[in-house]
Amino acid sequence: MKNLQTFDIVIVVVYLFLFPCLGYWVGRKQKTSEDYFLGGRKLRWWMVGISMVVTDIGALELVGVAGSAYGMGLAMANFDWIGCVPAMVLAAFLFIPLYWKAGVYTIPEYLGRRYNDGVRTMIAILWGLFLVANLGIFLWSAATVLEVMLGWPKWISILITASVVGLYTFFGGLEAVVMADMIQYANLMMGSIIILVVGLIKVGGIDGLVETVQAIGGPERKDFFHLLLPASTTHPMSWSAVFFGLALVLSPAYWVGNQAIVQRNLGTGNARDAKKSVLFGAALKLTIPILIVVPGMVGFALYPDLPEQDKIYPYMLQNMLPPGLLGLVFAGFLVVVMSGADAYLNSASTLWTMDVYKKYIYKEADQRHLYKVGRILTAAFIGLAVLMAPLTDKFEGVFSAMQTLLSLFQGPTFAILLLGMIWKGANSYGAIAGLVAGLITSFTLFWIKDGIFQAANPFLFIAWWSFVMGVVVTVVVSLFTPSRPANALAALTWSSKGS
Image (cartoon, rainbow, N blue to C red; front, side):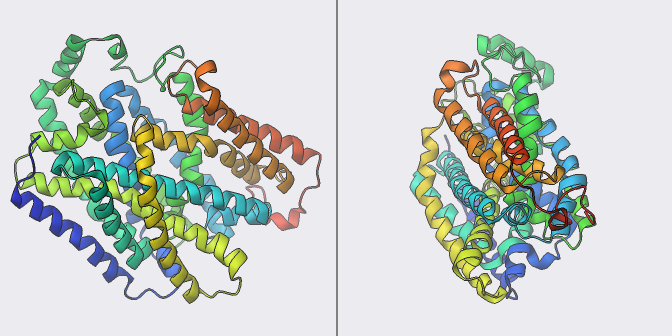
């Protein structure tokens, strides 16, 4: 593998230096927790839509999905076309307006108002741990890219990435995250289009891609160009897994229950702009499989013997672009990988500041005090994520690591969130019981998965069955225990007055 030229490295260094400066510039006038965590509720809808897409792409798409497309093929497009767009439309019209009318900072805060403080605390702790663990995955992903492009040891790369992300998020909060995403999106589009076009030219177009893959052969490639796969496949993206686990559970859970995603919507000026931001993001999402999944497939045709599939996208960057342009596109690629890290870092800080610190440690804290605490927690979480990043290597890849984490708890958390919004009868007893039962189900299924599932990595089925268990237990327990008075649910359910 060739290294970046000196001119390329200068571009990368300058580019990465500018992001902490951007964070400092954005944050110089911030004084309150609302400024820091919600961008002062003045973020433009189109900026938020782009930022949502960039955060979702991040390491999962550029490293994980592109790498999985290298090994699995077109079925990975389901993560955007089925796994994002329908859920985003649902979120825009049904979920986001309810969060806005409830006037909350966080999803655990909403669940606390809908159920009780016990539910709020459990969800805050779960999501807080998940966000920090995912932050570690993002850092590992960026380190993987730097290892390919520059030959740097992973620990050095992790520390550099953590320093850049930590600084501009520490200084500028959510507004800095969104502003950085604007730049990252422009570079992402430029780099992805170049890789797609150059790659297709090299392989002889779509026909050449099909012929090359078929010539390479192998039983694992027989469904390489199929979007929907039979239920009997060992591929984790069978049609049944995609429909039940992805479309019905993980996708809506991610787009309506993920603090790192929803927090951007709460930073817009009003509920109407929040809706527009999600719909705009959904429209942008339609193009992502073409720009990321297809290049991953092209990468297999061009470099079928790559030992680690997660490295295919940076490997293609390195081998297809000339000096100068390589540095610019690589810098943009690297900061897009980091973009998920900044969002998750800011959201973890928000959760623990508002749902743990303010709730249990210092209830009288004003916005100025919470602003300072948020910055301290931002620094603490980036340090913790650095220590957790190497755990990613315990999984088959970035995609496997992230989806496994999501499948373990998003099913039951989505169950109590959905029931809390659509059914007034759901109560705190049912929510706690459903959450615990769902978590036990997901961890048990993960532990014994080799004996009961055909798929090699059945995370989508685990998400589905833990969701079903969460719904059933929440409904049964709620039916036999007292419900909250209807007047206590105003603006908290779809059928409540004012919602």
